[in-house]
Image 1 (cartoon, each protein chain N blue to C red):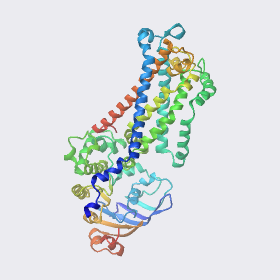
Image 2 (cartoon, chains in turn brown, yellow):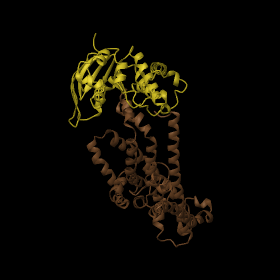
Image 3 (tube, rainbow over the protein chains, first blue to last red):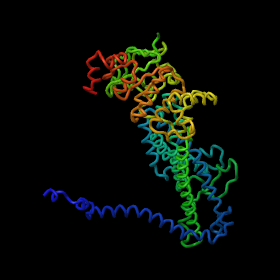
Length: 311
Length: 252
């Protein structure tokens, strides 16, 4: 009689194979698979529409300085230069500011101030880029012009604006990284006479390094991908600026801005159309490289930690 | 003989108003192992953290009373806590190796104090590792990560990190929690040797450990110091009923 009451192992297994379970599992699988399929399709589409850029245009011309689509001159150098200048400028401004702000928030600010600042920073992240672009155009550009630039709409203006946009991303992720550093590290350092600054600099920052790298990389990703705001404030001139201080204080145009500005007017299927997709492909590759670099850096860091670097 | 540390009528209140220490008074003599034991949340750890002013990290707390260290009141807000913490250093319940090599962990305190002399740093590393009983185990891999050590080794590393500063007093907050019996006995053995050079105040893992290592002991309960006595006296013939109840396992 007792054996009859004990359910067989197979019976215990049965509930997990109910139809609803199967349906839910399938749904989850579908959701996961769809992201992969969509990314693959995007890449395929970009490749199909953009590959002609690299097949039909001689490389010498493609990497030339002349971007005159009406004359069938598709030199990408001005656009690459624009993106590099604006991104570099934004990173130079945003990374130190972001990391320092995160240190202040996470390590120094009194709790009541942190409670005020953190939501404010998150609101900053939520401001639509077109609104920031408008602000930059109306408020920031005149200031830059007053600094002595020939026009207020320059690469530097774009950098400032993009830095502002990347800051919330960098700050909140960097702050999370600092928060994840065990309290014991700080105690251990303070308990043998290190000051708060020494503790932050020698212990907390090295311990949070991989998180900080990710914060910076995501910030860069945000900067490279931004379109409308840069379109509005960088002056929209597809020129390669001369080297020196003028590099940052000349009007430029980024790759993203070019796509946004010209896509509406281009004849579908024309070479110009293909080149715009080609630019998209290059952006895709750049984003991929940034991500790859980020994982590499994080990987190297954790390896170095195993070997005993840091401090 | 002047007491190394003299705690006089100390009251400590957390920012939320809860009183963690009430009227604590006792002396710690040079070169003794003074054990503070008692049930959880009786204020032992708070008292240790107060002694090297880690309580400064808490804003809005209040300290009343006097703690003299070699005759100087260190409960004053004006005391230089950084040099104080080099002379009264603390080791925690959870081993806290810092991310980095064994060598950089050991020299950390000295380097933060501004010591750059490589010969001195090397000498202190050797000496402190010997004192903590870790030299033989790690002498060939001083440049490998401190994170790769075992739990007991990490704890002795943290002990050595404090010793490298040649402090006068070492505060040990349950240094053998989470260690196996063999590592525990190694650490306890180390304490017996260290007593010759340092003054040690320790919160033990258990009453049994308290009885094993204590020269003198204080029993704490609900933020009060119930009784202070020599080790043997305390654990064989406690004066206070509450101490006896705790030692014999009637509560706690």
